[in-house]
Length: 419
Image (cartoon, rainbow, N blue to C red; front, side):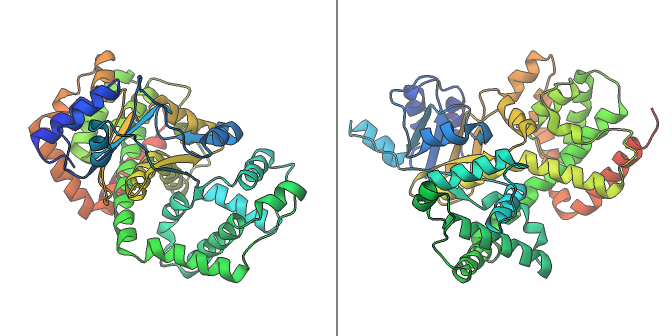
């Protein structure tokens, strides 16, 4: 996304920014390029609040994953920067939304159909109750992307549309009446809800912007699947130290994956180092007699979607931050997923207006992290290896099924080999 040396210098300065002044100095290298920035800072002159945020965190914060490492956020684009230089008052237009997965969407459908048991699903029921009472913003972005592979199958499409209809009915519940009496009254008919659902469905699955987003997500998902296969292969076939396993993973990244995934590489080392917080990777174990190839693929794909949550949040930030700055949250009851996120939240994200081009960055930089572990990653970033990975990645894009099938065969054999 950064196309010249000047912009790259600005970006590198952002990585080390601690306060508002650092950011504004870095922005001088990024001006007039249609960039927007959201960054978490240690020191900030003002703290921006957006409507409903405090109540959101108070009511259901224990079930939410934020994208950024703190709420101490600073926002910038050329328009805001020019106002700052002139000493004018700055008003930052903000919006937020909660995204959720297929699992939670199914709970809402059951609620709408009167089939959700409050006793058996106490936490879920509590969150649904508070979503209605407080009219918190939520969207279907992750749910729709997670179900994109069903497109083309009429029965699967019918199920997604039915779920979207239920979500639209749920969104229309009269909040005032519910708070007063506990009664659920819908303010739209099922027919209107279905029409709304169809518009939402085809806005993603039938538009050019939707096709662009789906293509990006598919590529990111495939990268995560291939990364996980390599990580599990190394974990299950070797009793080496975490450091030596990481050296093997580095080779896999260069020779098979063709993409360096910063966040996931740090998490892989933590997994190799037996970090008990990373329970999301424990769904797959060696020697599981109940595991067949179909279940293996399902576990890896489901875990890949977990890894994809921040990527979808990033796409949402860049896609929805046109007239406003958009702040996403992810709703989950999976404590393992929350702990995964908490190990490395984003410091900031730089993105181009009216595109889905973005560059996230972290306080915990992977090169510094691995340097502390006495692991040298510098050769990963050599010109030779960058070009090599590019060629491999382009090849993978053309032959993904062939590549992933081969790697899965190897993982399957490793899992089924006696220690």
